[in-house]
Image (tube, rainbow, N blue to C red; front, side, top):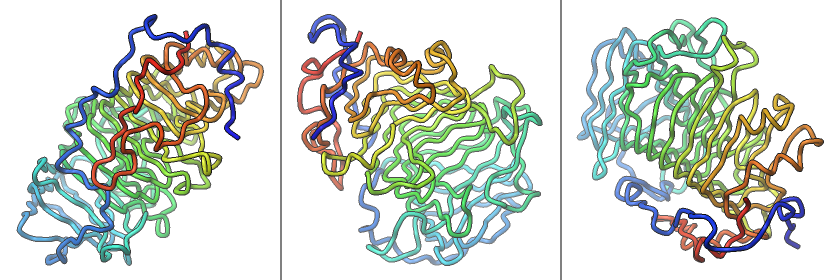
Length: 425
């Protein structure tokens, strides 16, 4: 039997359609998704690799799209070199000796794909045999500001220490240029329990260009950001085992046009969230409290493909820890237990209200809406969800959206008008 929102409904004043002006999500422009994405990469027959990448790239290097490259083990871009990848290039990544591309501090990855010819990093396994975490991932270290006591850190995953330093005092650095890239089946956890995510950005500079990136079937996080500052757009995470978007160590930025598609049976015992906002690293400490992670998500679609037979396996869509700050605007959240979960660092209602804001958005969940460690403020904390529309009771994903499980181009337009749903104010 579907769980009712006994706590949520206590805040409902009326059911109406004209009292607030809400975004019509069915008019949302999703044309940016088409042409370069692949929602069924396990079926794609990529050509065999022809040329092996060296494990140290210390000079400016250019990868051409008429060659399919093979990457095995840890490949380091060092010595302030630039690795430039032509649009349409395919890099097959080793699963036996899991491949990682590590772009060290001072070096640069320039990977400018296009809508017609995206750059693809994918598993070296044959079609229909690929899976989450076949290979490692892409790691980029920058000299941007990081909210740790020392102002820097070492990349997670026990990479070579001389190549693992990140952070500095160059907040405007052009650390990398990435556009129209697919990263498939990364996030290997057999070799490295941490650090092998789809795309890991450490101390990223604000002049970096990062857009149109799709990470599919990661065995760890899809996107993992440690410090730095950048505004990004057009990001997709498809069926990651851990977090879709993990932001920590004082990262600051705006993420626009963001999609996270999860499945209730693809998850991690360590906890899996569409968004995890971690204010600072408890092991490394922080410089000052006002430099904690602070991120804005606009036009985000966070969907767990759950129904009434399996929704009990889901968690909250968003996890807020160590005083992190998040603002969710003009977005959709569906299929999760709750909208947001706060850890013990949020000790009062005032702190929660300062840390989290969501407006002009829609949610479809099966829990109460907000989870807090402090039960005394639980009921009052639901007030942070006001001015958003929601379903009175949980709705299966296929009943709610137009074509959410398409293997070609999933669509998350609401079948019913937004004005038919409840609203909190």
